[in-house]
Image (cartoon, rainbow, N blue to C red; front, side, top):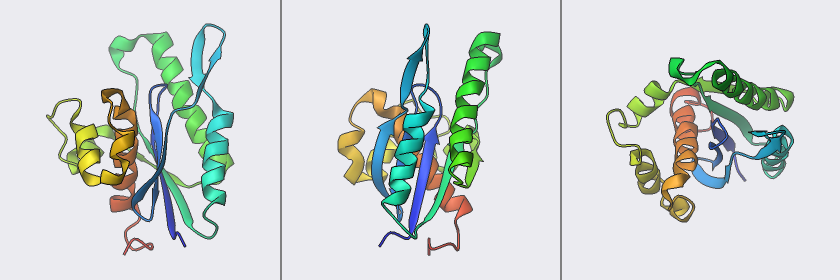
Length: 168
């Protein structure tokens, strides 16, 4: 019986959602999106269904999540910054509506904890493959960096937020 279900969420349209089941990789999905007019958005309904299905598959488990706390960069411009904020807001809204407690991880903090500061962009994916060899087949492409980040964000959450809660 699973005691802990931890969601790691790399927000953004090219992000991903990872599930750790008692510290081991479970399902990994690319961020569900949909086209609205002439641009893409997070598909909140599909995200909610995925999270709800994972929770239902593990009755009695402690459920929590961690969302990478990202902000717009000044060079992004107003429209881009607004859209990115809207994406992060939708994700947090889904978690709140489902009653899933979550923390936020600042990229520099979780990456420092994983030894990724000052490394190449692909270093997180390679680290995730080493740390979670059972997920290697789902992390084999360079574009799977969002999945790797989501796994490592979930691991960061377990290492920093769940100490003493069934993680022992």
